[in-house]
Length: 165
Length: 422
Ligand code: SF4
Image (cartoon, rainbow over all chains, first blue to last red; front, side, top):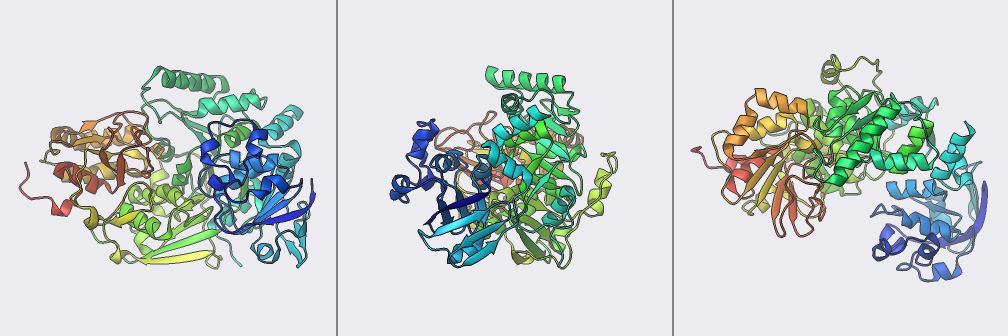
């Protein structure tokens, strides 16, 4: 999971959790696989049809603003999304993503130059984004967070770690 | 280059020489705060395979959100929390009636300068009034802290707010905070560490200062901090026997944004429905009929707030057609207010005084508005339905404005209340 290679889906600023996962589904859909079918429905209907495992969303500032609903992270994860790189993230969505084992990275310089649909490589342990325009660095993710990714989320990670103690 | 408060304290806690914004660190909080949601967190903790908590000494558990229990479900919930406290040997437990968690944490000397408080409540930012790093986290994250004793945090960017000069006498810290939130917006401090500097901030007493980190959560902030000074150290003198080491930002720290205000230009304001950043000068809304006035909460339910409201209410009556609810933020505040004669003033004016806790702040009980009613409140949130009724409107203001509006039956600044009391 340390290196992720995928195609870029590029979006703009202030994409809120309502367009990532619409509020109308929050009380009617509980199955993650079902949630996945509605990811980004109101922003980009092509996304769920064409997304491939390890694809990467590259977005502007304040990705995931609005409601704190966890489904916004779950529905992306369930589509096999590899990571999100943005100029900035809304705080709760950011935490929800990492806690569901979806890598999210802040790197405004990279966002400015990465092109839609290009192939990008992310090295989480080394802290590098490699794209057509060059290599960008970010502080490498610590062991805990890598552990959360490997376990498949915070709850599973805690369970595993606790059992090992 | 120097470090901001957040960069420095998180580096210290993580055992690193320095940190940069965006970096992720692992830390063990000094205090892990939870309230009525402790029962729900216990469920997640058990799902994680948790049996014994990592360290019962770091827990601060305060029952405040629906206290005393309004329904059987709430009572059962409280019972489960008490059981958990017993089983785990939690040291810092405060049962129903002690007060709102953020206020109690400060009074009990559990939020200390240079320490990290993580809480499963969005206004945990409040701890910044003591110079602590206070941040809200989710329930699963709290359960994970119970189990492992640590959690990851992203080092936030920092926003420095400098307020020069002096607030005019009719303007409070609430007006200042609402004014700034109105200007910067509800995402103006998104994921940031917000630092409050300047002589206008230093001049505020602790009770007024507390409003700032509390309500900064409404700008999306991760934490909010006021550099602790002698006021804080004296306050803590007989309240805490733990050693603490204050942390201050370096003078050459680099901030993502610095905003400056001249305190003398701030006027009384009000946050209009249904967002906290929908802020208007009070004069624009003056005259609007209100059905209920609510004085209390972690934002503005302290002794000084009750005192300011009592000064307005003394010798006056709440207007017919309007109700007023007063809820001291803690039992300590309640006792002090009783001794100061404020409680008598409230009851004589026709207000209802209720037991310490959150009360109707988030719509659990003790003053839910009817459909179509208009409320003026000293709280920090006015989202649609926040007080339990979707079709009601909540305006947020300072304690003195809440009190004056209860007397007039309409929104008004106390300076325009008619003289001739009685
Ligand atoms: S008083 Fe209101 S804002 Fe404060 S902790 Fe209670 S519910 Fe939250």
